[in-house]
Length: 148
Image 1 (spheres, one colour):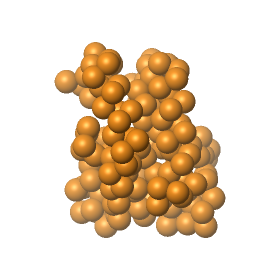
Image 2: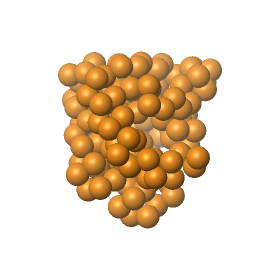
Image 3: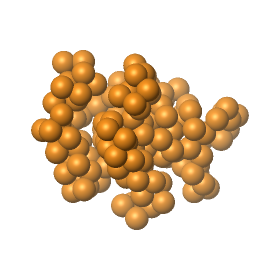
């Protein structure tokens, strides 16, 4: 799955966010047919947004789609999704969430499973490294992001 176009797009988005001075989390929403519907990265810092996490940005980038477009879709994300993004995946009936890593943060994985969603954790070294380095170098931004 680390070679899936959706995961590659999510990692590219995370790197883009980091290059912009933001939190390096990326996501891509992929249809059951394998088409990337939307992609995005955390923009809380860049846009001063309270809600523009990577998964939300990917959903926003997909535009207004009929509910059937989300059936069987996969959300690829570089970091375990927070409660808000978990809820969005459930709301839009995303079937599977593929997570780059969950060592730096564990979000709503158990809730996704309890709601019948497939959860795949890749334990990707690159995702762990750039997220861990970000948390170490900019703890004030990370702590702000997770409301510590």
